[in-house]
Image (cartoon, rainbow, N blue to C red):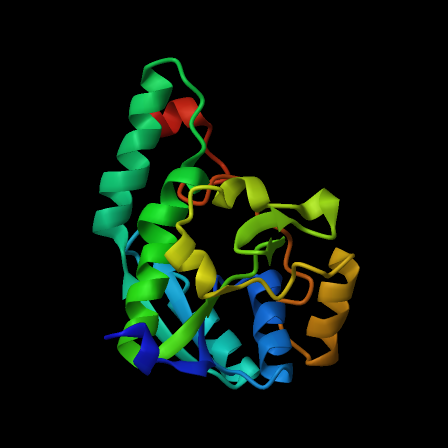
Length: 202
């Protein structure tokens, strides 16, 4: 589909189930966008489908769920293991964002006729370039430096100018979202929080 035929009032939002992406959906709706959520199933286990379905229902948005475990394993997990075994310290997000996450967002946005894509990352776009977020303690711009100009042109970061995570949680509470107090994810998304990296690599 040609981008000139896409609707600039439609946006496909990466919806993880966390409070940041949920708040991003609320902010986008408040700006008049027609929001559709997109959930990446990176492990192919469907274990979070019920939770993200409930969240989409609370937000009043449509939701697309896709099993991306094959491409994620090939591009992200295999690289993670190879780098660690080689004595390096990999950053899986830097590999995933251009090659899996935003690639899939663009593909599915094209499919549903949405011009824009969005995520709950803390960063901004200025003059066609990724910039640091207003909330420097949450800034995630470094994870996104490999995104292409074509992707950045269609990208919205609703949380880029939000100064406090407390503001995000307050917004979620105002809408009675069940994930308003959900703790932030600090670990690598595909490694169980009870495992250490050595166990995972083995």
